[in-house]
Length: 324
Ligand code: TXA
Ligand code: MG
Image (cartoon, rainbow, N blue to C red):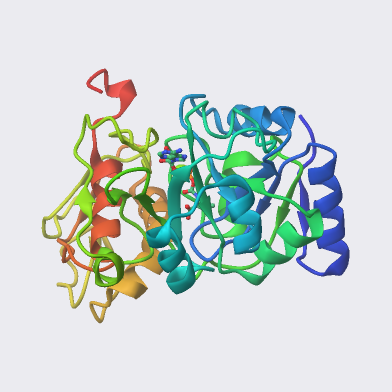
């Protein structure tokens, strides 16, 4: 077991992290959405290490993180829609799936040998400073063991991956709290994963976006049914129950549940997204080994769509149930 170094995102911490990346090592770093587990996207040994550390299936490709549009255009082919979206929302929580440029040095493991690449510019000063200090693209999935709740704080990363990765850059809690929206643009615009940029904002810019249907060939292979899973079973769209830990949204009844955690007492979807993964972890801890979790209904618009996507995967039957 290697030692995972905690690093502060100051000049010396960033220099140390960049050197580890150049040596093919793995560094967890903050983005505005969740913490990413970064490795050199042009080094297959580093990329293989990412799959290994997460226990992630190799058919599930990674997002390439770049510091600017010029770096993005080195690896992906942009059409007018992609340029308009990049201009409006980058840096920010939008990932574009675009045709891959061949022979530009990305490890084929990053794209799981597809002919498309998922790419984004994160809106976090530490992420951008790290990419610049390293000087190239970073492949980075969320920094959690595959299938588990995503990390929005450095301590969440340490809980899941300590001893399996080189370092964790601590940038405090993530502001957005759910992963980027993934938009497929290799054909008609298709929503592959709802996330930190609301679909309504994308449609306002480029017109109607198709919703991905299960079984479509153009799919984000990582969108497995069970994901973001706490240890305790989770039931959605219900009120508090005496023997369960309840996730409330908006003003919620007191004193009925075993414990009540509130995603946003004022009913604000942005706040609820920012709190979601931390509160899921807290609920799991409070529920204990034989406990259960219930969750209030969340409005299904704006960021609510991403929250409901994560909650429904967190509630889905687990592979270990023998039912998925
Ligand atoms: O906010 C985020 O997007 C975070 C931060 C770290 O940037 N990253 C993240 O990565 O959520 P990950 O690996 O947990 O999710 C990446 C998703 C997966 O569902 C994967 O299948 C999809 O992106 N994906 C990657 N490349 C793709 C491609 N070429 N075509 C379709 N889907 C792709
Ligand atoms: Mg993930």
